[in-house]
Structure formats: C-alpha cells, structure tokens
Image (cartoon, rainbow, N blue to C red; front, side, top):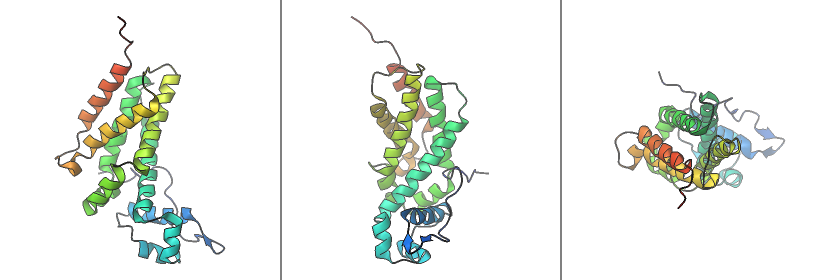
Amino acid sequence: MRDTRVMNTGTPPRTADGARLGTALTRRAAIDAATQAYLRGEAVDMSALAAQLGIGRSTLYRLVGNRDDLLGVVLAEATERTFRRAAAGATPEGGVDLVLDVINRFMRAVIDAEPLQALCQREPLVFIRLALLPGAVEQIAAKLIAEMLQTEVTAGRLEASLPATALSQAIVRMCDAHLYAPLLGGTEPEIDTALDLVAALLSHLNRPPVRA
C-alpha cells in the first residue's frame, strides 16, 4: 500500500474553519484550504475556495495571486515537507552517501505521492509549468539541497569547487528531468539514472584538483 503521508509531512494544515481573524482573512488560511483540497486529490477551484472561505474571488486573488501562484505555493510547501521527511530518515553519516540517500528517499516519496499523481493525471501541463520551470517549487528544492550541501562542506565531509547554490540548481534540474520523465515523453521515472548522475557530479567535484 502506498504511503499517503508523502508530500504531506508533519502536521497537515488546518482547514479554513475559523479562518477569519475578525473581518480579515489571512493568506495562510487560503493556502491551507487549497492544500487540503490538493491532499484530497481534488482540483483547486478558485471560486469554490473563495466560497468556502466566505470571501469574493477578487479578495482571494489579492491574497494569493492567481491559481498558478497558489498551486505553486502548495506544491513548494509539499516539496519542503517531503524533503525534510527524507532528510530525517537518512541513514548515512554524511558526505556524498548522505546526499544521495536523501535525494533517493525524496524522489521515491514524490513518485508515490497520491495527491501529486492525481494532479499530474488531471493537469499535466499545469504541473510541468509549475514544477519544471523556474518558480517556487524549483526555488525551494534548490534551497533545501544547497543547505544540505553547505552543511556537509562546512563539516568537512564533502568538498566542492562550485558554490552550493550553483551545484544545487544543477542537481535539481538533472533530477527533475529524470523523475518526471513520463511527463516529458518517457515511460517510467528514471530515479537510478538521476542518482548515478548526481553521484558522478559530486564524486568529480570531491576529487583533489589535478596540478600540472
């Protein structure tokens, strides 16, 4: 049975009961309500969401931007929850092995995430636009990986001749291309290939420089 907790790590956001603080509705309440719809495998409908929250569509748009903006935040937060869960479950002590273990756990959790599967089946082009192009999802994934890499470099468990931020961007884009291969014309996610590429990159950067 698939673990329906993936992409929903930690305490699930509360729904919009009592979302009003006096007469002001918080942006957080709107995001939480959209997240609950996503986790149920439902489409995020801006009209329905506004009605649920007891506000007009124009107010909702002022709070969260357009539908893509809102979905981007929902997916970015789901990405962070899943990544932190993967990092918490990692077993290697550090270095390249730790990085690979976290990325492996993260990618396998993503492909098993039922809410994400529902979104990809229902709106594949929307997901590609939000997850595979520069935006909130890519930014949070790159930030989390950069933090992990920098921690390992600072601890002396990993050497890298590139800044952690640049390296993390390369890792995210390599992994995304293989993780979401079925959305890009492939047949199956290519997680092992992605891990091999990350391992090759990190191993190359971890070597001492060749001197003439």
